[in-house]
Image: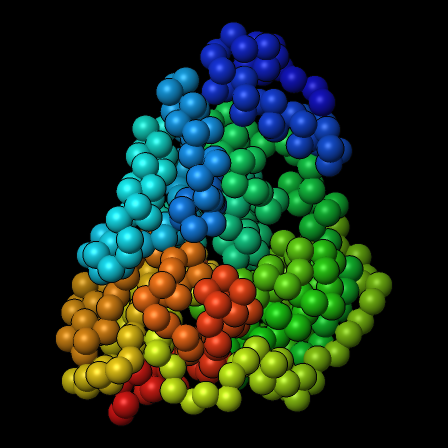
Length: 393
Ligand code: F3S
């Protein structure tokens, strides 16, 4: 890889251990995937923030980076952690809370924004055609497909390294020729709600692996529905972006393969993801990916004036930022006995330690991961049905 004079000096350790380590990670990655140089990024988004997903070993590495003056050179946001201070922080074991705080402290020392969300694009929407180094797969697909910003699917360490150097290698989806769809997908009947969009994503991720689809038949989808589609697509496949039928991309050529998705296949996927015959969940969870302002409003309108059932937990997860600007909706949800938790989600937390056996959710991504990561059964249903189940209205 070509390095500028300054980059070479960083690589040789002239600017300290943290920068040298990060530059080494980026150069190795670039060499591995055919990058030819480093390009400046507009922002970085780092995953592996939750103690549950990070574990103990990387904590020492984070400490060493912070001690060696590792500092974010570009705006850097963080993925959700394993708890929130107000609710789960009081229910979970002390050592989990301590470890989590230690992790957050190291990121804070390096100047990373304590955004703690998988939807950093609600805090600051990246401009079109800007290069990013984002590590949360659902946010990566959303950035590439809906916002037309450009990012590979980074791992935690490479996003961290890119944040500290302010650059990323120019391979993969940073190159226009790699942003061209190769499979044409015809969706026969447009999905009717966010859960069906998620199920479509699960199905396509399994079929496409890392091929970029051009999806026809989803015109009129809302940004929240596209968010669900992308999150699910990235769960079962390595797809980093999708195009919609009416969009023309630079250099686009004719897709070589064509597949058709029928409504019954989407319905079957939902059935397959609902891995229980139990109809009563212990926990109803909405907010994967983290709720938008509009979703907060919808939930508040559906729940207002009612009470959450005595034997049911109702969690709505979002970022601190959305929580603040959605204050009125938060109040209406909390008055029902539901919990609006910021900076966390069930998958990267420990509902299983709180006795949760069955989760009901509108998110296909959560339905896909919860049986393994939370050891729970799952009921997958649209938002309206989830809220109705939680509050019994
Ligand atoms: Fe976000 Fe957690 Fe889902 S990090 S995308 S809410 S699994």
